[in-house]
Length: 407
Image 1 (cartoon, rainbow, N blue to C red):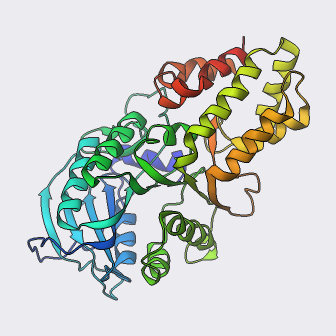
Image 2: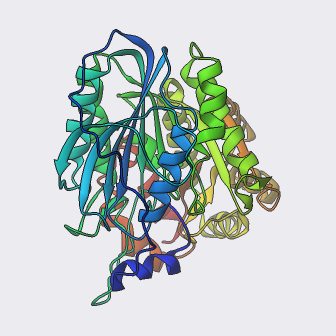
């Protein structure tokens, strides 16, 4: 999450917004409940300058609270209060104070350690069993990569879940490991995974959890500090507790973007999308097929491809680009050697892969899935060593394709 990178700098100087009441004074032992339809597990890392927004979002959750069909459980870390507590979210109407009971007090925990996320899932599954699970990682995010350069005294988030107390964060590969372990704990694929964080709706991020997640949720662009409108989303979800993961994702997509179109969060930029991970393999194969053709192009045709990259919808990072828009631009410049059947098949698969998508009006070309498209050879070289270790590259050879374009 969340605001633009300039707003991350206050982390470095300890400027944290005031943080109101953190959890209830009441600590109770969690009771193993009967199986419900869903358990919503929110890994809320406020050990950074997003701390105050954690209070806002938990208070929003309490406007609805857990129901007879849906458990809402949050592991909430606060930089200001130096606590990490697990709450079973219950309904109240106090918008300024969190009153849900603390069911586990961890004291402090490294929220930048992927194993901490796994332990939260293990604990949640044990105490709040359900047929289906939605795991939400809440914090700063930077897509599949961090900034490569780090000036002395300036710390930027690395991939997702930055913890100021420890200096740790969860890399894209580690996030994949965490979801793999979570699926083993649950006994089936994680029904729905979402990042309440910036820039995470990427092919490269989804590729790390292709074998462990059924439905994937995220934003292509930066998220405003307020993040998801939990109260509006939960009102809809709790009214339809037997909704499928895709249906729950569609509700979240609609409510999130609506909240920034003059809704509860005012008017700010927003994008959001849902991916059907059962289509990940077909998608990766289609990218491999496209790449095979691109790698065979002569220099004049490669120049056209680079031009298409330049015209493609970008996001906060200039090398994060909308894949659907890129494919459309390839068709427009008419690359000799790339059969329209190849791009047509990829478009068809993308229509099946991206099941929900919404964006505010100034992002008409944000179609739901970003991919790495560095605009020049310098940026390619800067991040390639990390990219080549991603599962998406291993299965699609996309990094090799990009290298060929700048030869």
